[in-house]
Length: 327
Image 1 (tube, rainbow, N blue to C red):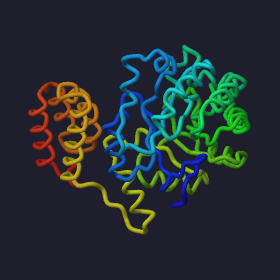
Image 2 (tube, one colour; image 1 turned 180 degrees about the vertical axis):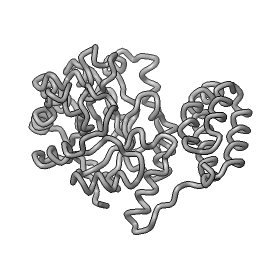
Image 3 (spheres, rainbow, N blue to C red; image 1 turned 30 degrees about the vertical axis):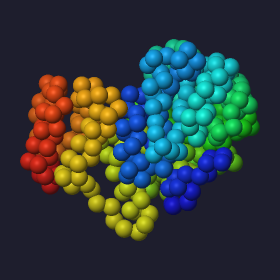
Image 4 (cartoon, one colour; image 1 turned 45 degrees about the vertical axis):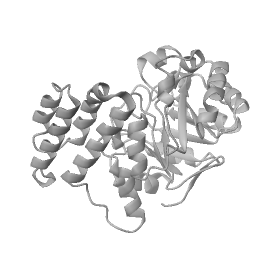
C-alpha cells in the first residue's frame, strides 16, 4: 500500500495524485495539498487551442512556483496536431502531461474533446501517438468507461494508448452518461489493471483516507487520484500518510480547520488579489464547514461578504464557536 507509483521517469511516493479540476485546482489548492503530503498535483484542465493562441484566460492556469513540483498539466482538445503543439508549449513548465479523454461536460464534449473521444478509439490512439512523438516528459491519459454503459470502450482505448507509448492510464469507472451519478464501478479498474503492463491509476468516489485504502485493496491499482474528496479536506493526504505509517488518522479539529481555511484564503489573496479571493473562497468555505453545526447560516452570511478583512473575522468567529463534536 506504500509502494511508489512510477510513471515513465517520474516516481510518485506515496502513490497519490491530486486530480485536475476546472475552477478548483489552482496554485492555492495545490499548495495546501502539497503541505498535507500530496506528492503530485495537476493544474486545472487546459484547452489546447487556448494554449496555442496564448489566451488571456488560459495562460494564468499555468501559474506555479518551485514548491509546486512535480506538476502535471492536463490538456484537452480533439485535434492530434493541436494537442501535440500544446504539449510542446507546456513541456518545460511541468513534469507530466495528461490528455483528458473523460470530461463529460457538454461544452467540452460538443467540441469533440473529453468523453467524446471515447466514441472514437482510432482518433484517441492517433492523439496519443502524435503527442508522444512531440514530448519527452511522461504522458498519460484520463478516461471513463465509455460513452454509455452499452458503449464500453475503455479497455480498447487503454490498450491502444499503451501501444502508442502512453506511460499510465487513469480510469474513472463511470460512463459519460452517468456523469457523477451512482457509485463508480471499481471492478472496472481491476479489469484494466489485469490487461495493461503500464500503471493503472484509479479515480472515483474517494472522499476519505479509508477510501484510498479500500481502492488499493479492492482493485490492485498502482495509484489513486483524488478529486472532489480534497475539497474542504486537504488532510486526506496527510491522513493516508499516517495510516500507512501504522498509526490511526484523526479528524482535524475545528481549530485546525480554521487554520487551514485562513491559509487557503491568504493563498488565494496572493494569487488573485483580495477582492477575487473573497469570491473564490466562498465556495471553498462551503466545503470546509460541511457537516458542522450552523453551517447553513454561515454559508448564507459569507455569500453577502465582499470585504477580505470581514471574511477573516467571520471565519475566526465561526470556527471558534463550533466544535466538531456538536456537528
